[in-house]
Image (spheres, rainbow, N blue to C red):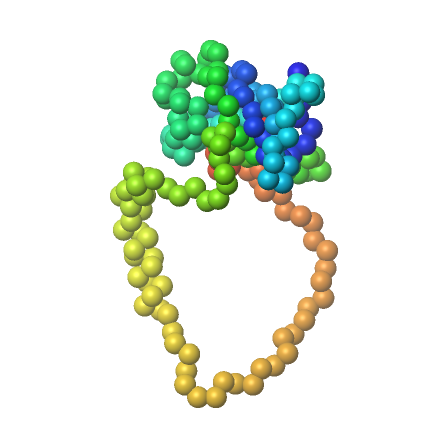
Length: 204
């Protein structure tokens, strides 16, 4: 099967899947899934790939982080989209016959550009922001609520109001010469143990 050669939004179907470990010394683990492309979103219309040669792309979904903790958003996404029951044994077998929608993007690191599965969604996903479920809101509140309220309270206390009277005259800002600087790479961009790309997904 040919490897996908372009970014975009696609309808796809899982054709193979399994588990993989992270780098040496890490406790991380991922579900890898090979997706066969069935259609591509062109504007607002879907273009079928049925008449073309088969193409696929492999995405990694990190279910366990480097420190051994569960990557909850990715586990939830696999459960919601692919009806995964959370049992690792069910990963090492035939993938579920469930059509999905994936978003594939390009990422460049050290001069090398690669395609990456960035998002995994239900096949009929219409876009927009996916809000947290009531259960997820409760979990966030229970874990971080006191810290968030303390941070917000401190910020509100230090908030100042504009002084009354005539505002001071504006002066032109000083300009500094622009000098070329070497780009600083994002260290976790292609780190196989970095789960912060959810779907938690990256190309295998």
